[in-house]
Length: 72
Image (tube, rainbow, N blue to C red):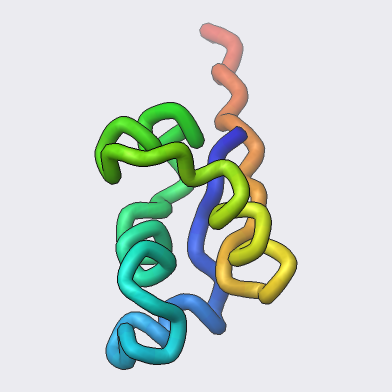
């Protein structure tokens, strides 16, 4: 599963104290290309629950993987 920032997340980036350190780090690193596994490796902790909470709170959204375009 890939996560990306929502407009609410972009607004929160300037105020990290509103969401806490780990949540701010996840919001900062979520770019629609990093998997939960990669985000967990980058933070050094399992972020599955934190990411789900941030999604429910409207800070993260699930990003569908880009589909390959057929060759002409």
